Image 1 (tube, rainbow, N blue to C red):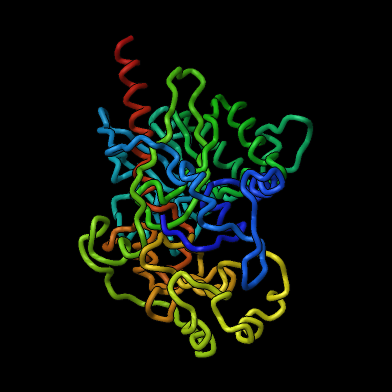
Image 2: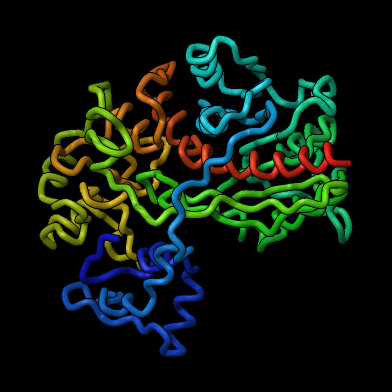
Length: 413
């Protein structure tokens, strides 16, 4: 874990895997007290304070070699909201066969078809598809459904109340297919969306259609061979007639860095291929040239800070994504759909430019031979929206482990 001298509230929250509210409470209780940073006078945390909390850096102290699990049968998956295929490739690498993928975005569909001509890509609005032909013929339904609020009609949210939302379509597909297990994935923010009511609504809907939801977890991609601080909330439903517990993939101790992503090493057997990428305007280059590796706007001279930040200079918060240059020896911050947004800057460590398309893909652990269709902007969007491939693979192994137990039990009856 790369350490600096001082950490903002946001950085400390990410580092420890605790909410900002928890850290504020700890500050009041004196459990982990914030201090004043000498230059900016912002409330920050000193690196020495984290030595007491090193157990948070790696959730599981026990070293594991691999989550690998060999499939004892041919397992199949129906994927919804498939995007450019990050989760689907991960499942494929784990040994799960994809029978069909639904996706609305035409460029993402072209990407899927170009790379896997044998995949059955169902292009278009999920509302227009029926999945009844897969009933009792598919083992897994997955879907990275967008987070939408429900309108509440009564105390307990049911499937009918969710009509019109994309989670309704996910639940409808699960109900039509009736797989042993379903996996939904979303952003961490779903935990607190509408004060947690949205997530509770989803759980009650899955309960209504016959699925018990495993306690929800947020998986940190850096613990699963992904050189990026990305988090995904995983929602797992197990059909109620199945009395086998699902176990999340165990985290690895090794943390990969940006250097591992872009240079030849354990993750990739060659340096990142050359490719197209966005460029910064000259005015931005002049500012970012002054930012060191792992630095951000606070490393700029005070007058340049004020000019570059504008009105946001006087607002609260760490704003740690502004003018941020990633370091070689740290995992990349979460990639967004556009590589040069002011609030979420991810500048190359040595060159003053955003990451290229292939660099973006490497940070998301896509194979180098996975080609993206559409304009450069469309390609960035597809990659930025994806589930990291290696995270998808580890989740795939955990599903195989569950299905192996399920079918073994069925045979023994």
